[in-house]
Image (tube, rainbow, N blue to C red; front, top):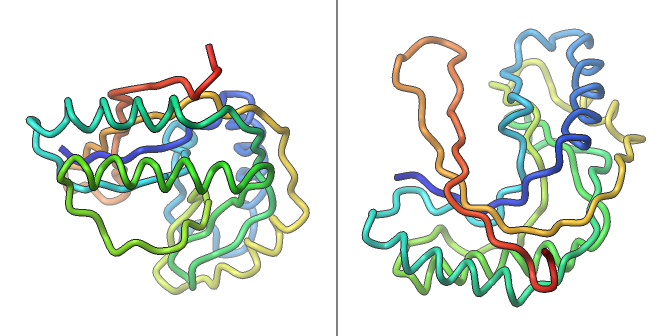
Length: 189
């Protein structure tokens, strides 16, 4: 199964960002982009790709320990950017160091469980809003996000999510995400 560790924003934050995204969708060329669905918005901490079923119990125990070792922390959505003209994203503000630490711990949990991970690189928190194929350029959308500052919330849990890839082959079909585990951060709950 395809898994990733994530921080999921609360419903009120998703609703707030959905209003901002609705305005972005009125910009020229927006209909050429593949917009992500609000129910799938998340901050990926560690992408694990394919994980064997027999690895999941060890992985979940290690993620539980990683969560217990991390204190709850404040986070908000803030501004945005783009990776070339491939992905438009909303950024984060708040205790980014704590978010990076949680990402490092989730990555370590996966590696210690025997999961082959991508090359380790500096964690850049982002929530993907849309994907492009080079046209239209994404810079104007990122510029439109520059002043965005979302409401702050307290990150209180680490989540393990299963990504169910589209099977129909229909254009525009998106992956479906299913939460398979949640662990409170240290001192939460």
